Structures are given as C-alpha cells and as structure tokens.
Amino acid sequence: MKKHTHIYWLFLLPSLLGVMLFYIIPFFFSLYYALIDNLGSGRFVGLDNFAAALKNPLFGQAAGNTLLFIGLCVPLGMTLALFLSLCLQKMKRGRAPAVLALLVPLVVPSGSIVYFWRVLFDQNGLLRKLLLQAGFSNELVFQSSWTMAILVVVFLWKNVSYNIVLFWSGLVWIPRTYYEQMALEGAGAWRQFAGVTWVYLSPTTFVVLLMSVVNSFKVFKEIYMLYGPYPGTGVYMLQHYMNNQFQSLSLPQLCSAAYILFLAVSLVLLAVFRLQKRVTDTYQ
Image 1 (tube, helix red, strand yellow):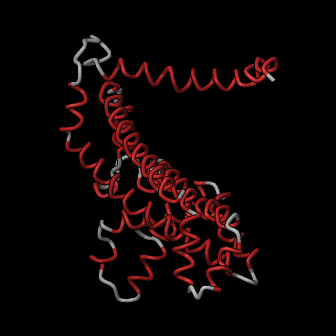
Image 2 (cartoon, helix red, strand yellow; image 1 turned 45 degrees about the vertical axis):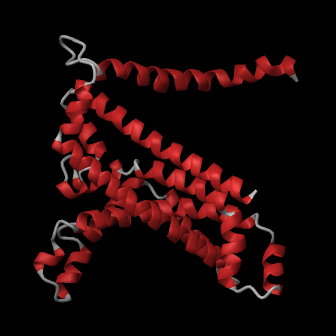
C-alpha cells in the first residue's frame, strides 16, 4: 500500500496547489495589509487597523445585523428542516412529489430566486399591494423593519432544503427496531423522539449547525441583488462593509475586518466542535 502513496499525492497535487495559490497564500499575505497604514507608504502600524475597525460605527452596525441574522436564521432553519424531515418520514403517500417540491430551491439559480422575491417584496411588489388592498396602513407596509424579515424568509427558502437532505440522511440510518422497542414499553411519540431520534441524530444535528452557520455568511449575493451595495441600516452586513472597503481600495481596513470576522467564526466553530465532543461522549 505504501508504494502507491506517491500516486495518491500526484492526483492530489493539482487540488493542493489550487488551495495554496488561491486561499493559503492570499490569507497570510493579507496579514501584511492589515498591519500597515496604507498601500502608498506601507508603514507598520501594528493593531491600529483592528482597533479602528472595532471603533467604527458602521462596522459595529454591520456586526450587529450579521449576528441578528445568524441568530434568527440558524435556529429557525434547523427547526423547520427537522420538522419537515420528520413529516416526510411519516408520510405514506405523496412523499416523492413532496421531496421534489422541497428540493427545488437547491437547483434554482440565485438570480431567479432574487427576481422572484423582488416581485413579491419590492416597494411596488405584489405582497405590498395586497397588504395595502387588505387595509393595512402605508406606515406598516413600508416600514424598514420588514427588510430583515424578508431577508430571513429568502434565506430559509433557499437553504432549508439542504438541511432537509442532511437530516433525512440521518433519519434513514436510525434502526426501526429502536422505535418498536420503545412503543412496546408504552413510550409515546415525544418520548420516542427524545430517546431515539434526538440521540441518534445528534451527530447530524451538529453537521447541520456547522453548515447553517457557514451558509449564513454567504447571503451577501442575495442582499446585494435585492437592496444594492448600500442597503438600509437594518440589513447592512459585514459583507457590505468589506465590499465597500474593497471598492474604495482601503485594503488595510478590509483585511483587518476580514481577520476579525475570521477569528469570530473560528471561535464559534471551535465551540460547536467542543460541544459536539461533549454530547458524543455523554451518549457513548
């Protein structure tokens, strides 16, 4: 087996070179920009750019909106995906068309999705017109607080399908005999869920949690297409802040903000991994 190891590395070499060229080298090279004052002088300023980013009110607004968005989308998306997966598991008829309908958002291009939601939620969109015709006031229909709710709906519609696939794959591997044994012992549906489904689905749940957190940072494209590069303060995200810094060629501010975001995401993922290990050790 060992004599063929060099063949495996030969096949892996193109991918490894691509990752190094487009990810690893730029990642460490951007640290240089985060530690200088500007591209002209290149004077070393240490952590001044990081401190300036943390004190910037726009950065604070963007960070707060991003945390709010993640705090809404991740638990809602996971709960909805788990509920729909359990419903699909219990269905006797019509499962195939139901699965097809739920998986459609996975294959629909983002541009088509955004156009569809703009038709509904735009300032002159169909939903707002229906609300006005139903008797709702202009202040209620056009208030800015709707922007975050619309964004959450768009994210859930696009990403819940992916979580359903993950939960469904985890549910399939749970032996039916465990449910039958608990049913013989007089356990109801809730006890079966808590004692069997939730326990054996915990590894899949942590995978869904990780992917949900990661996907929540990929919503910039949809926001950009819905509200443009300078949206309202209610949906101004960290991605907007960094994109605007890039357009103004403020690379030191861009790189420092990117490193702060990287550290924050890394801490969250590390906490999730440790929580997963603790839960896994408890059930083993």
